[in-house]
Image (cartoon, rainbow, N blue to C red; front, side, top):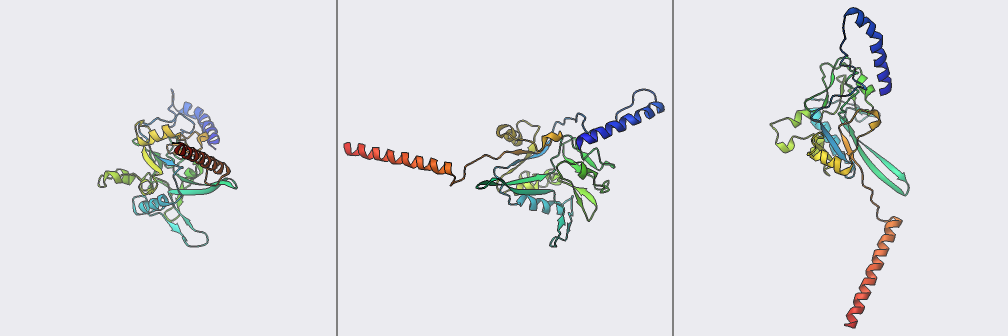
Length: 281
């Protein structure tokens, strides 16, 4: 899809070049809106989430806290249509996908939280016809101006991660804001100036900070634990990153049973030798 957009914008620019040349003399500036595939501007600061998949238990505390804060905050109200019906729909900034991996009996349950990744080169921004979707230079957060949004869904179509949602009641596109109305609220205690999902996580699976700062908690976690971006082949440079799961053998697997048996046998031999030494003394 990104490649198709590149070709579309390239062809559009070439087609309009003669007309611009006839209208005015000299070199013409390149339209700033056409940025897909171009070298994105490097920001000095980029706030983002780092999610530890090794300790996420899929409790959905991040989902419910995000829904509650944003529905009652500047982003809300976030609609729920027929919440208890046969075909419920609703608007969420954060969702947790749970699935099974592996082949029985060596299977494992994986919980994978997903929200807007606040890409360094977000494809949702240049496709917006009204400029409602934009990326802030001060902290790298991608936001939507509801006063400009016309609900055309172009941004949802362009996002390769499926992280844009239409609020059916207000007919505007919504997404994760990293709780921008919370993290800069000086009325809150410093410990509370974090996204609602980060504060609510009971296992500490969600970290928040400046990924461009090499001394920040998130940067250290990415560097030391092999943090990675989701679907890097799209070349959107996601700011949010994930810490990989560490493989551990479950109790009851053949290799674990053999290891435990070997340790018990070794312990038994050691005890017999000590007993013999005691009798000899």
